Each structure stands twice: as structure tokens, then as C-alpha cells.
Image (cartoon, rainbow, N blue to C red; front, side):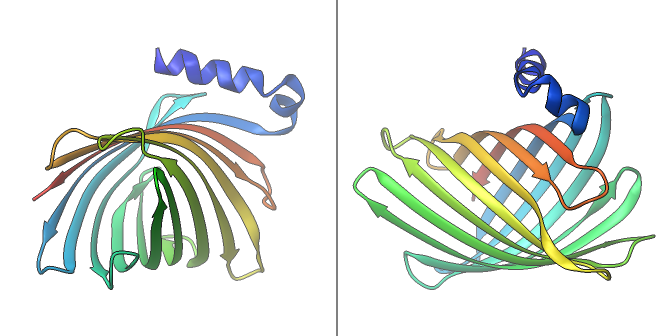
Length: 211
């Protein structure tokens, strides 16, 4: 059902896009846990699987991510993280530092995150990225918050520095109980300023347990 719906979205982008750009459909599945080390410091651990659904069904990527997050106050949080896994069968590693801001106005919630990261594989030179993500959410009740978000990637490699990707997102966060959260998201990801323009339609499901 999910695959059929995503393929329909691909079709709706139009025949001209299909001819000019490479269209892909992916699924992102993530399970994670958070551990409170102190009042303001938490340890985060996640396992991720990212299969490609169309045009070919393959498990292109899976990762393990470990991070620390420190809350300065109720609005600001800083974090460090490391990700290690396989991308299309090759080892890939990533280190990142981030800062987040979160605020609310009645039922509305605003979020901003800036992340600086460096990633490398066995056969490629390191690639650096600066990512800015903006989110606007609306709390329907204490359990459910749908949202819209956008993220922009500034990439630097051995050749040049340029904007090479943006993502638009529509999703919802749902609090199952005090310990568990679910998040379901559709992501439209467009990579440009590259040899092959690559458009990905992504269905993402994330589950988190708070210890």
C-alpha cells in the first residue's frame, strides 16, 4: 500500500521530470533509545535501515548512530554524534555537531537545527556539509503534532562549495505514552548541482524509547 502510494506521487511529478531526472523511492526505518545521564545530558542510540523500493528493491544503507545531547535551557540544545554503517556495501562513517532551537506559541511549535558534519567512505575523499532545518508544527493535542519542514544542504568537497540538496517534509509526531514516541514522515529530497540530478521520495518511520 505504501509503495503504491509513493509510486503514484512519482507519477504525479510529470513525464518531463521523469525524462530529465532520476526518480527513486526509498523507505527509512529507525529504532532508537534515549538515556538520561544527568538532568541536562542524554545519550542517544539509533539503528537505521534504508532500503530502496523503486526502481530496484535493495537494502542500500544501514547505520548505527550514537550521540550526546546537552540542553542549555528549555529552548536550546547542542549535540555531538557519530554514525557508522554500510552504504551500498561500502563502509561509511560520519561525525557531526549540531545546535537546536525550539519554541512554542500556543499550539504552534517552531524548531530550527543547524548541523555541521563530515562523512567519508573507504574509496572517497571526505565530504563536509552544513545543514539547516526549519520546522513548523501544530499540536492538536498532547499526543499528536503534525508538521511541515524544510532542510537545505551546503556541501564542500575537494572541488567546490555549493548548495547541492534540499528536502521538504510533511509528517506527524505521536506520543504513544510517556516512554515511547512514533514519527511518520514523507520526504521529498532533490539533489542538484551534481552530475546526475537525483529526486528521492522517502517514507520514514521512526520509533523512540525514553529510558
